[in-house]
Length: 359
Image (cartoon, rainbow, N blue to C red):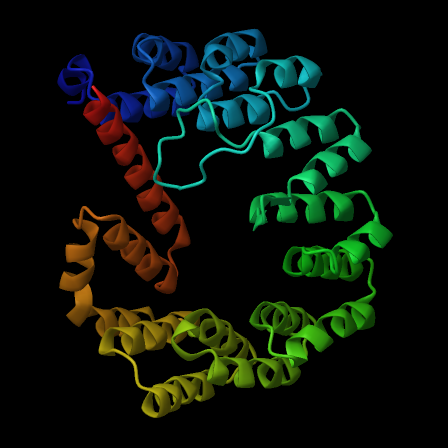
């Protein structure tokens, strides 16, 4: 049934058939199907071909396929990821574009000579055991021209935590990377059973109104069975967050449900919106989220049914704003993977359109 579509070069058909062949352990046939389209430079075909080759252990071919396309950020990332454990990190680092900070607009084409190579170079340095160099590289690029690069800050914090560099991680909390360092340091302490220290670390910023610290503190308390304390941490944050409270309310309701108080969670949602207002759709999303957490999927679907047309309109909205709004709705409905897939499709479509316009 799919062969006529494959013959036209239509990517969805080729991808589907290649996936079936790989699933049926006919990997050589899948590779042969993908290679002609990959040779034309089709990014998705290149990526899938490289993954199949890596799965077969053909690392030389992976490098041959991805190396010439290393100016493409997405494919360069694949090259780094697929060669882990192959003892070729120095070679891969030499292939990558030199360190530099370029455009960061997520809807700009990443097929460019000026993208941010810092994270990948840091990964390769870490894989070679050159931890000091990786940390120094990330540290130099946390702030560039007065702009904080969140990805660099988070990667640095995780790097320090992975390698037990607690003193540096604590210092980073007061050197401009507080949010990311606090999260990494909290996990570091929790993994070592130092729960009271982890709680104390988050209590001060949470108490001063930092919503991210409150969020992490509530999650920490809930993981250790302290649900009532977690609720008390989140309630004032939800009340003061205004229109940006969805993520706090979702966690608050989840903790209440997990504590066996589903009716209390629903009552809180009704009471919150009665006092603060909000669109009917936002209220329905919040109620549906709680109902799904309670295992009442049919009732959750009934809450959302009147708004199905709105989501359909957003799905077909060609604007960036519409795409982001649709992804946000998917996340709120408990389907983050669909949201990620939707945004990835939007990115690929934007890149194709941009290339056509440039022609």
